[in-house]
Image (cartoon, rainbow, N blue to C red; front, side, top):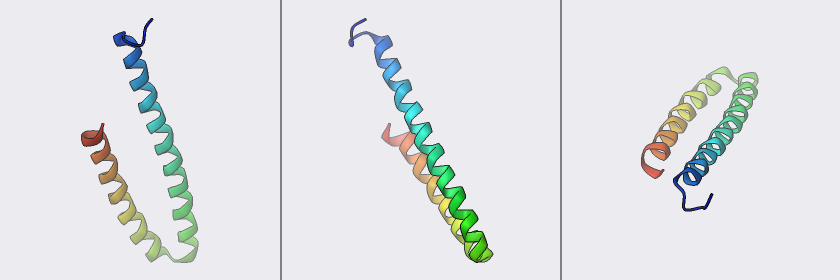
Length: 69
């Protein structure tokens, strides 16, 4: 198969989405650990940070998927 074939381009796109999913999984894991550490300090601050960061991450992921890819 050549790089010009349509199937090779599809495989590259799948790898890109796979990498995006892996990065998202690591981001989610670090976010969860951060929330757990904040819950030990102060529950009110943890709630505000969790809600704000969840909204910001959701909007950022949506913008990336819909407009930048």
